[in-house]
Amino acid sequence: MSTFTLTEPQQQALLHAARSAQRQAYAPYSHYPVGAAVLDDQGRIHAGCNVENAAYPEGLCAEASALAAMVLAGSTRALAVLVVGQGGQNNSAWTTPCGGCRQKLREFGAPDMPILSANDTTLGPRYTLSALLPESFGPEHLGNT
Image (cartoon, rainbow, N blue to C red; front, side, top):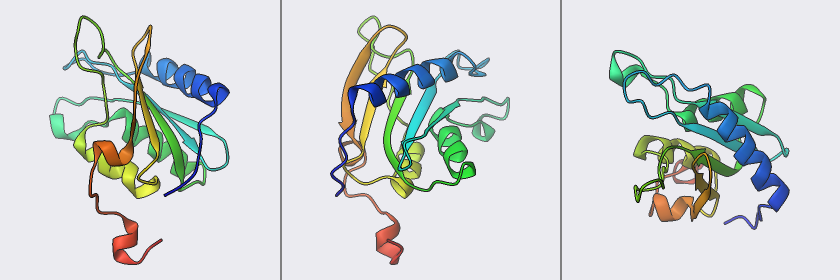
């Protein structure tokens, strides 16, 4: 377990990056734009948005595209994630990473990594990766820690 604590300025920077990314989402099929921002171990923020495709399984999730941007920038360690979607409005569930993205996040983040949710007006619940993906399988299972 890490001992990382997300500061208020980091949280606000993640929120701003994820909301900006959400505005760039390409979601003509679901009409559910999502933005995500990842804070890496060098203090940099990497954003991504969902990019849908007519062949549905070929689209990209916002979290996956943010992780790809992080790796492209030379980092392989995520410290925190913030996801912005339409959830939390009109009593709907908050947007959290899908199952596949939870596993992708596990590749780069500790089980206690904070994952925050938000919409276009409000910061929502805060989770840990282990709360969203309990008893997960990670790199340490393969001796890659």
